[in-house]
Image 1 (cartoon, rainbow, N blue to C red):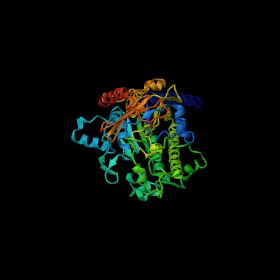
Image 2 (image 1 turned 135 degrees about the vertical axis):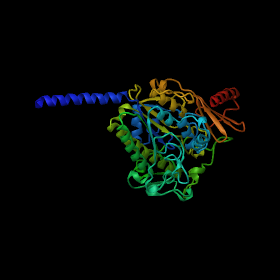
Image 3 (image 1 turned 180 degrees about the horizontal axis):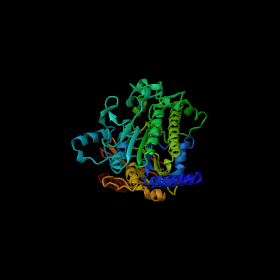
Image 4 (image 1 turned 120 degrees about the vertical axis):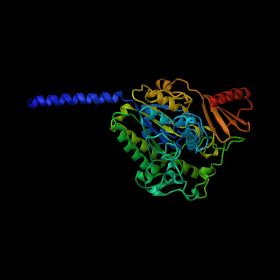
Amino acid sequence: MNRISQLIAIGFFCLINMQGIAQSSQNKSPNILFICIDDLRPELNCFGATYIHSPNIDKLASEGVSFMDHFVNAPSCGPSRYTLLTGTYGPAGNMALFQRAEKMKKKPDSVYPSMPEWFRSHGYITVSVGKVSHHPGGYGGEDWDDSTVVEMPNAWTKELMPVGKWQHPRGAMHGLANGEIRNKAGDMSVYQSTAGPDTIYPDGLIANEGIKQLRLLAANKKKPFFLAIGLIKPHLPFGSPKDYLDLYRGVQLPPIAHPQKPEGETTWHKSGEFMGYNRWGRDPRNDAAFADSVRRHYASCVSYSDMHVGEIMAELKRIGADKNTIVILWGDHGWHLGEHAIWGKHSLFEESLRSPLIIRYPGMKNRGKKSNAIIETLDIFPTLCQLTNITIPSFAKGVSLKPILENPKVKGHTAVSYWGDAKTLRTLNYRLTVHKDGFVELYDHTSSDGETQNIAIQNPDKVKELKKLLDKKIKR
């Protein structure tokens, strides 16, 4: 064979081989990249907070569908992630998934598979990096690094939590710059901005490890992956590299909506988690300058997380895996920044329960669209099943969002949430909150009063109607 013939033969072989690889990639089920961000309310430019610098999440929103009225099922990390990861309503405390794990030990047949376990049983490699379940890395023990105490048995092929100078996952969870660990909240500053690279805070390490795992998973041409990366900020304490706080110097923040403490019985609280940190003797509820500073530091943490989202998405595209990967960005609950005189979560007001949700998948037609349908975190499990052509398990209580993804004008349903001794139902026009002692709150979202005027006494028929809906949905 002469030289020209050899080159032709080699070129033909390469062409056939590349076509085979492309065909193999097309035939493989879609990958899933799930990015969770802790304590992220819809404080994003693409969700209407125009003073926020969030170009990377905004870009993702321009490529997918943004759910503007997504509500979590509990206003705290543990129970909200329980709902996400199991597809069912569950206990209201932060140890909800550990309680499930204990139940699995005693009566394995009484516990349904988790979402990652379900995908694992359908051929997916499942990897968790950072804070995906309540404990970053998914272990219990004094420092959250005891591999004999697993938060989600059978769920993940690998669970990873890089800790660096923070020594262990517990240290990283509430860590500040350069390895500072929270031992007593009162000894740790409620916010901080330190000069240095992104890795001086724990999320820099989480993002780097997430990108490393993304490369490894994408190299496997035979099995699809379910990669969940959990970023910690903007969880308290509000710490980010100084460059991110500098983005907000000279920026005019909008006034705090309805900053007054509500009258009568509500789920208002004293902001104990926030107030427990060192605040230099200042209180944002009566110190406008301090409130402004707190809000800027929260915003800086949002921008810090946004930068990591951008790094992850850039790597997904660089390695070519974006063409066959479903991407979801999810905030695990909201956060009050002074609304109702609350600084924190743990209420059943809108600010604690509404969080961002963005879904992008290959071949979607409604890129950049926004949906105002009422939906809940419970819906994510069946949605991912339908997008990957995996059977939706009968125990999953949510509703697939695929019809809304295909037509963002499709109506949603109702959203249930619970905390403490109360539970709440959000419909398109109303929020009903029922307390254990029988007291009822009813708010009209068609009114400018929003969740400031309890109209329950004036509307007994509406209360009765919504109570039935709430009870029926929780028992479902």
